[in-house]
Image 1: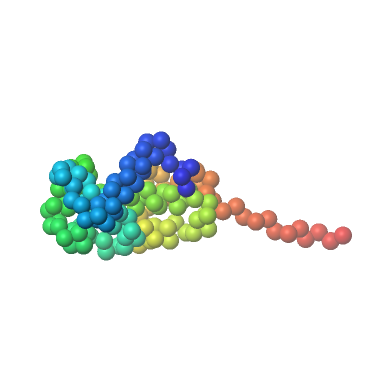
Image 2 (image 1 turned 90 degrees about the horizontal axis):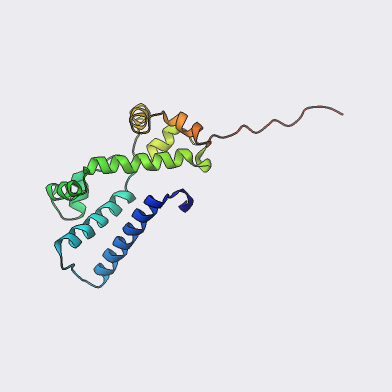
Length: 162
């Protein structure tokens, strides 16, 4: 899994892990960050972790996310706006990244594309296919093939008689 992370992604992942650890430790020690930017960053880390755990939930909404964190939907949208993305855009991006990962993964080669899409919150295969193609420039099936994650047929045993 970590072999798939490029340098830029690794740096981002390391930053997120550190932010998450800071948030957990601050919660355990009942500390409040002194500066507002740190508080917003900490809240954003909590929110993105919450979303990550629920990406497969087709009913995941900004209102549900905001309520779970005791903030208004307006505040939720402002947090993501400061990061240059919308809440829905971030959810869509993460879902598609997970779908892409599963489509490249040989362990999922026998799973139908529709099942992978449904697992990550896209129960409508046609909608998923259009969205995937608009994002990655190719269909999910062709993406899977181009990354070599297709199940190879097992050759039938030889039927020659000696």
